[in-house]
Image (cartoon, rainbow, N blue to C red; front, side):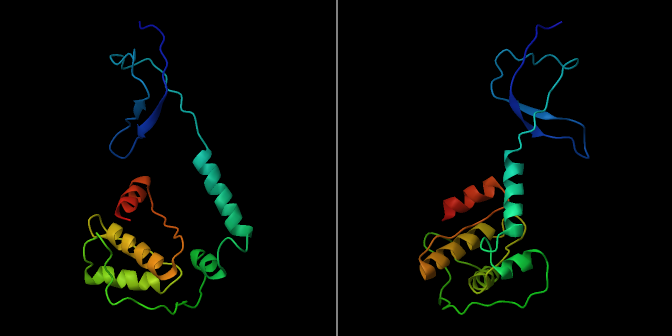
Length: 165
């Protein structure tokens, strides 16, 4: 029998198709009974901060006419809308300082993004999405001189893009 112990941590692995294992990373493992493999309890505490922020953003999106343009609103909801093209001066060279040269597909993605209010870049790992995105940001700032809001599907993706920019 072990003496009572409690700790705080974060879930780092959840059950999947390959097993029922749950992984927990403790903030401090000092005194943790690591040899104890049964007869213990893990209490999961829901932290709703991210969920609350998403809910707030969706509510605002649904009712606020100025938070997003009508075109983007309807496009995101899957409605049929005529394609909207910006009249912009496209540069002769689409490269950006301190970034690798772009291939044909990346140049197409940059042109596409510069001419439209909404653009999606997707592809398997290692295909240059981060370099392409950083080049788009560079070109937008060069053309418009203002701030650019960039979204990515994970914190790691945002960190990598920030390093490139």
